Image 1 (tube, rainbow, N blue to C red):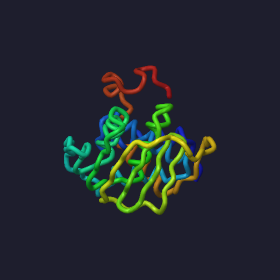
Image 2: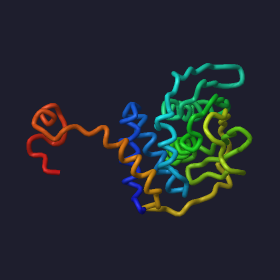
Image 3: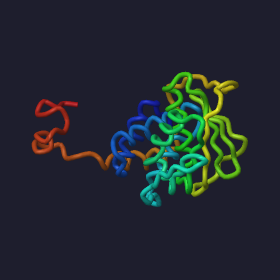
Length: 209
């Protein structure tokens, strides 16, 4: 089925919020899904992997070591934005992640952040035995991505020789995955009644959307 990138952004953000992510991190997941879809990757599946029934992340711990920052475990929805902040603030130090639960979403969070930070460079992401180069305009992997649970190492690199991607306004989404994402998003709805409107839902008593 064909969906617009705006629909991907809205549904992925709502689904991530329904799964318990703070709204700011849910928005990061939504932007990451949209960026991935624009690169021809499965952004919808990436979000579902991070928030699905099997996703019960333990609290992550950030530790500064001589080599660089270490995060264990690494639930991407919770730590992805912070990892990007560290990379941009300390470009000479790598970030080591243990037990990454959603590798593709991690790449999306990095990519969309670089796309909004002109001149930031690119990031090399070693996922298990696979190295992926991520820039704001696309990603390039030397092989297929590993499944969840792998360790990762991220480091800033030069932005030269990046692959460019033609702009897209819509993508083809797997109908079953899209329906699952919509089911998650529907969980943040509240009843359309005077009580919910009096507590801030909708646009008030004149809400006719």
